[in-house]
Length: 144
Image 1 (cartoon, rainbow, N blue to C red):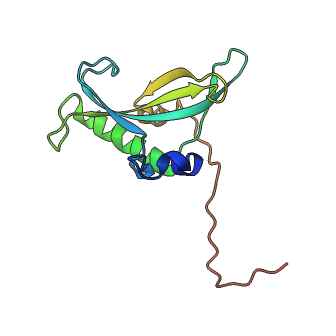
Image 2: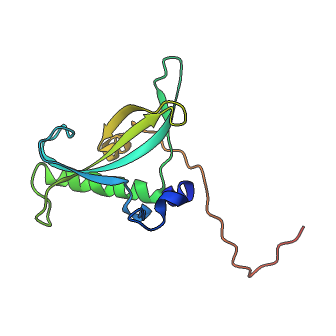
């Protein structure tokens, strides 16, 4: 998605983007200043969002299937670790989303959601399918 939106920033010169990670960047929170769970590796997905509703408290944003899969995977690993280091011997990882509103005029951080997989699991985030990838293999005729 970033490559499609910002191609000039993603060509050469260290600006290559890997959307396959399922998050935008990693931050090693050694002091536990960002994470409410203490020091750990934070996998941060930044989302532009729209704020609606009478009090401006209704938020909508989009997630790719890959972001959803990575979010759920890290929720399972985070829940199973219960504070222990990761199985690979490294530090624990926390997937979080940082929401930015009013991106085009006056960007502001609207909030952060730690371990969104937990909210999905509890049904506190409503998921609505928006798009379908349609592939025609050409084996049948399309007629008017």
